[in-house]
Amino acid sequence: MYLSTYPFGFREEWLCRAVAALGFVFSEAGYGLPPLRVSIGWTSRGRGHCVAECWPRAASSIGVNEIFVAPTEDNSVAILDHLTHELAHAIDDCQSGHGKSFRKIALDVGLQGRMSEARAGRELRLKLYSIAEAIGPIPHQKIYVPEIEG
Image (cartoon, rainbow, N blue to C red; front, side, top):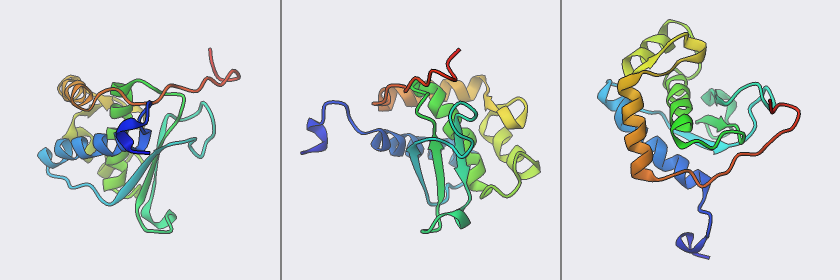
């Protein structure tokens, strides 16, 4: 079956396009993205505790950063926002947590707020909306988990 005939599209294909587009945001700030993979999947903390997570290269059998976005999220701009945060961790290879090195990268690309919850500031948010418009909506609908839904 050809990709173009699959009626729902593939989430990982969209995520790869998203990372490629976000790569330009990081390169404008002077950073290159390391080799990585990104998927929809539960984070290590389990359902409902964390929307996205980056793993260091040492944890991967192929030596790349592994990023997971929880399947409870389906808003394309929100996913791009979370990916931006996790890509900052990937550049740092998860070495500083939310410390000094991560903070510099995050602020340089336009993330704001408490670093453990850093999200796109106004200028970056506008870029994320443009990216979402260019690549279209993510072909994913959230999974509802009754014990964590309000």
